[in-house]
Length: 368
Image (cartoon, rainbow, N blue to C red; front, side, top):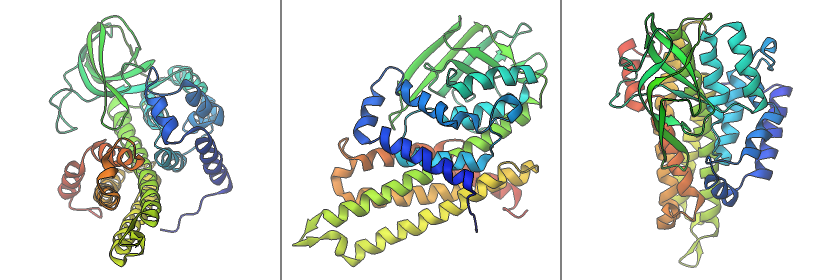
């Protein structure tokens, strides 16, 4: 695919890359992980000052009117730096879910997200949910109070605004719950890649329904599509850094009196990983362009095809990185093990390989 960034997109990439190079490295990241909330609030505000969170919102909402291509640029840089912050929730998911709300709801929440005052997340999955198309058990009464349980909610205990998928008197809807609301219990934990998640229980928790915009089902499908595109971009950034770390390691690691990077067999393994990464780059670009396609089926099939390729390549790059590092690659002291864990988590985000392969097969393929 021939894909060239325009001047504004190159400026975005350069400014964010410089910011992350200055504020993030492996040791700093480990310190951020141990902070209350799992990340440094100063970094979050730095993202807001760079205009990162303004990108997906329209100019009428106080944003910059960006597209999913800009989200891909940001995601690639975030993956390369292995950031902890819930940037995808703020950039890809929340703006999509807000499409179900009125103009006033969207502008009010957009202002808080753009300024960095609101940290949003989405509570959608429920215990025992295997297929992402399964029925939602969480319910909302006529007053909008929620009852039910949501699981694997990214930064669920730390978020200041939670979008909740629930069934109300009029069917499936999207509701907003403030962090720390009455009747809500958050059981937080760390995920294997160092981020935070929580299981949220609602017991007549007060909420505000998003209404006046597009149907909730469409907003949810859009959020899943844009979230998936963001995940693929982040995985691409992780792959790029993992390959760089591994090549640098084998150049300096000596065995039999010479650097192991000089062995042709290892060069072939590393070269194969580069090929896989480049294929993912093309597919991630394709997915970001298709994210805003008006044909929902074509969009979803394109994203599924890209996710299947991402999963295959992520596994090959991750295994190559650990294999060439040897046993030290899985220790906490080496960055490569942390990249491997993040790539593993991204493989199952927004549907694993089997889910997306099934979707492609049911449709008869990408070109169906």
